[in-house]
Image (tube, rainbow, N blue to C red; front, side, top):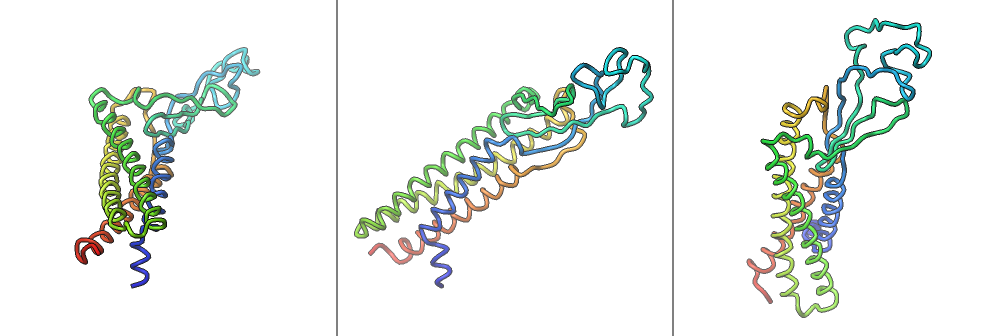
Length: 237
């Protein structure tokens, strides 16, 4: 019973909501939802590119090399890329020094998926906004509990609103996550020719977003359960 009381305590719900808000914010701003490799033909050698390229007479001591005998996958390079909700960054294959070039993910999205992409971004922002409101309400409730114990009824009302906002935010975030992954899949299959992943998978921001959702729902359900037990079943005292 003591363990259940600790799990339902407002302080633990506040900590869970803050953790969920932090993880959601980091995942939202990150460009590491998906990572992978592209398959593109080797570029021509240039003054800034001397390796893993097609020799060009007069460049990089390759004046005596007139033909490239590469076959199969040897004719291609496999630059890495990582994609988030806002930007996608790709390895620059035209220089030996490692660097990336980034562009907005919305520029890659097919026209038929634009509306879903903007809707998914809106849901993600609403998700973070509702979590921020929940954190504010729970912090006010903790202040009331510590400094004005005679007004616990108002604190319980704030607790209930925070629980509703947390659960609602979590549901919106879940839908936003799934919609974005659907948009990404459509972009992979129908996007521009210069963005055709050879292989890809999920990265740490994707898992952080779903971990934030799990913590968010845990906080919301436990807080709402606590309010139900104390107010609706027992009654205000």
